[in-house]
Length: 298
Image 1 (cartoon, rainbow, N blue to C red):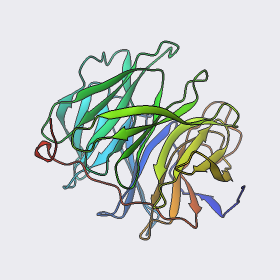
Image 2 (image 1 turned 90 degrees about the vertical axis):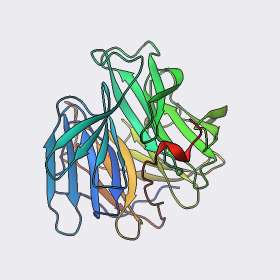
Image 3 (image 1 turned 90 degrees about the horizontal axis):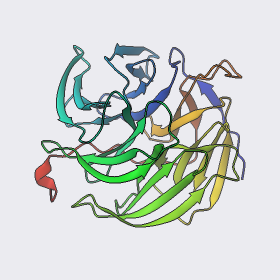
């Protein structure tokens, strides 16, 4: 089913590589990163104002905490960032990763409060050198899996019992589902959930709605797909950007979809690189915050 809802670009949100968007209910703000622009950004839906904080290197994704601090996955580890004054502090280093050759990419916080993120090569990604990591507040970063080209599409089902993960590389283009143990963070029973080899776009960032459906940004294909827990597409939204990268539900009722995008040299429309706003008939789930290590078996 193809549905064309009202779509607009949020003013003053254009990036080079917009990614990692999430809605912060505490502040009533959208936050996301510009990877190659080396920045954290925010947008206030109430007044249309935005803010941009420069960062020392390329950020991959972000997470919320119980405080005003934002967690940013940087090439060498996870940092706590204070939007009020721009102060950063190292929370945990990422083991087994050379920040000169690799950086963080997509991430998501499980419903139980673990921050899960992946790494990718900065340059040639033909070798599957990316890894999957997770972190709880006060703990060390743990490596969980290896062997990915481009880690993407991380998301968790409403009951936290199913985890989703994709590899966007052109020869893979697969989203997998896993059984997720919330207490240990372990992913098991890997199985193919959906492949985009017959779709317009490759699998990029994702989010989950209250029905447990998986919303996928089809990067390179100007589309958003809503995929049911059974792995069937029941909604396709055509977008006015070629390279959508990450969706999230936001706004006071969590019924509006916000999508980051990339502005590459062949960008076909003026909207490319902006955050796109889409009114939907569906509702998202509040963004979890990262929990302390004593909540888990570590």
